Image (cartoon, rainbow, N blue to C red; front, side):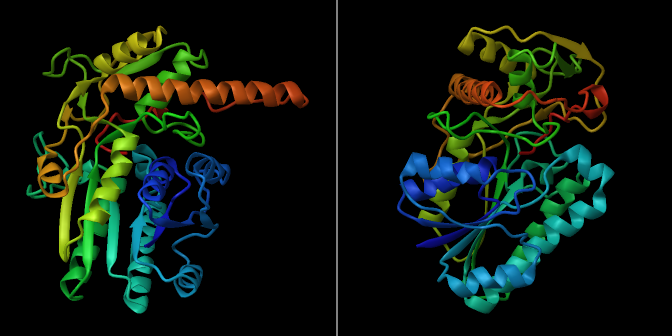
Length: 362
């Protein structure tokens, strides 16, 4: 089966390409590389020893998307491509609404035209809004606190409506929680462009000395240690969830949470990282941030019941694999800097105002 993976050079997308190829699927990737690198697909090839067909396009471009559909007999689409920074979406709502919603519409239109009836959508736990954890797929979705979350909810509604009037369509909405970690080879992992959006990249930046300390927003929540609770899932488990979906397709619309069903506090994650890797991660407690939830974790029992999927890797695996990848990247950068003239490698100062919301999103 030929699967089009949009955003396939990204963090979750690249790991899913590996999982798909290991399961015997052929992969075609469409990615505009706005927050990813083409070399990641070379690493995917190195891991799987299989070719990845790659198109550097923006999937809001209807003509470019049709080119792919006309050249390949596609059996399904997994749609990852999209802008994904919660804080940036508040600052640039139009860019988020256009990119994330138009891309869903363009792909859906191409699927209708070319008879591609399998569509897996990369959604997010942010669609639950301020519902009370654990989040269950049957919950009524409450308004989200940011445009990013709204684009996911709107895309879910678009795909649901399309499936209703297209018999034989299989639409799967996957609501991710907080992916961390990296491939155990250390070849692919999370490499955010610019300021990171998630907690783990900040932890690794402190661990390697690029930042002096980590800011933890609030220690007065009604949780085990006062810090926010999130559902951290190994990115490899998340990727394998997509294979489980393709292996168990049914007509209509299906919704699944992909998480561990276990809440972990920010301080528990920091301590586990320290113990797993033998590295101190200094931190300071600062005031809460508006919009942060006390708890955000999944009830992932439906995926286990209907897909036979469950997260297999634990928090130690996540922390160890994340640091293995970062260590390899540090070594690679050091070798490159030794062989090239010195260059300035400054980046924006990372302060409280541009640290990420540790929210329920990928």
